[in-house]
Amino acid sequence: MTKGSFFAKKEQAEFIQKVYKQTPDLVQDFFNRETGFLQEALAGKKLVLEVGCGFGRSMPAVDPKSHYFGVDIGFTYVAEALRRNNRGNWICGDARNLSFCDSSFDAVFCIQNTLGNMEGIESRVIHEAKRVCAENGSLIFSVYSEDSFEVRRLWYDRLVDAGIFGRVWLDDNPKVARSDTGWSSRCFDQQELIKLLGLKNIQVKKLDSFLYFCTGQPDK
Image (tube, rainbow, N blue to C red; front, side, top):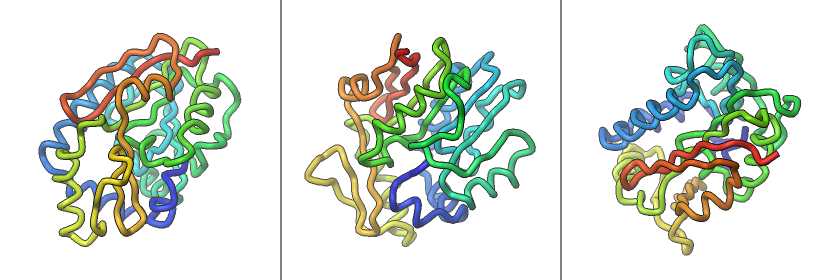
């Protein structure tokens, strides 16, 4: 997949691990709850694809009986995922042009605001996720909510203090946070998210003031 120019340049696996090591307890609690939602959504799915797998942090939520495929644009992320996990199929590829046939998977997911790091290509990535998902399959996305910045700032401040990110500020569009290192992260309000995803039978859960967890089916 692609995470935008910042993560394409910073594709070293140790970089993203440094980012997650700075996660505040409050943010980690939200991620743990997200994992619980994901585990429930993936229950019973035989063929599962993760778009933006990184080094495999989502694997605990995947049923051991499922056939899992993870795609990421970062070769070193994929190599680290292979090293860390004794199951799964790990592929270096671009989310805008997935190398799978139509309707290949029972579930396709893209979580932890990976979609929010894909500035300018979100619609193309969603289109590809829909294409490779079976008609009655599940599409799963999670993104930061519009009122999440104060919680996220706890994380960003740690990253700045550790020298991992540069200065972080809100863009002229207050839904986009940016850093002088080239990083950006977008959040969403519920209505624009529903419109952007365009899923059939969509269900949206909000984890307090942090993120939206969305499930639905491709409108085929």
